[in-house]
Length: 310
Image (cartoon, rainbow, N blue to C red; front, top):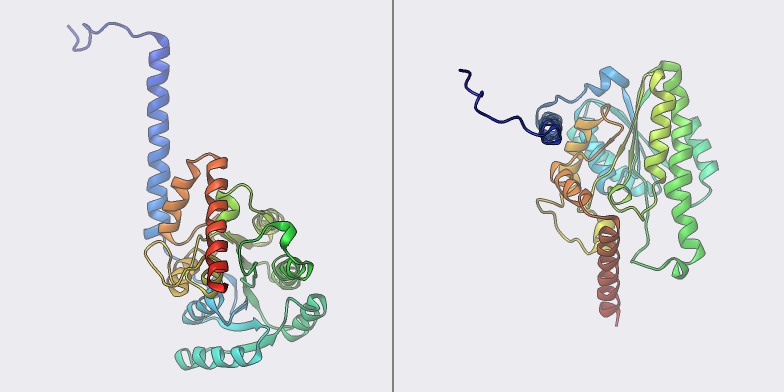
């Protein structure tokens, strides 16, 4: 007699549910193990070998942009630093060269809040002949506090459009032409996980990145949108009152270390692993819960700022 002969046959729907449960379990296990590999075991790409000897970074004198510059310099890449403040550019260049004396650095003053079209045109002339293999679109601005749309002055949201949208688009268009000729390159757009996790947030940078990924993959150009949650920077301090780094809010330096390791891989990623954990649990919540939470955070921050001012 066989071992299981005494067991009664189960209804067909029970068998289907059983196999479905096994399939879901195996699928989730695969995703989890793949995340472990990507986050902790996957080796970073040799950026200089894959893409070229120069990296261009916008918003490179503070926060994530500055930290990314140091990480890329440690990888041996020459740097084109783009910022609106010449004195800051000079200071950051000196710091970089003191640590990495064998690299070359080119400083470009470009104010995205001004005549961005003319500025990018001048940038094209300045980088002509340079093998820009990696582009980091990091320059970005936001409101100085949480505000309703009708309260935002026109000059404020026009500045946001110029810097975040036009600036990113025009710089990418200027740099990608050289990448096409060389048939290699990496474009990294620094966005925000809020635009993916919180459904009411705008998705421009994410959608632009996805479109460029599809268009230029066959040219050997890797386009990636990085979507971090809060990082301890001046912008995060002004907007969300974040004054120090913690496990779930990394310093710009800790974020940059994780970010550079991801360049050239997924089309969209959250490089800092505690952010990915937060993102996973947030994705389990309905949209209206996330929207309500994000709205309440803005209101609380707005109230605290007004109290300080009065």
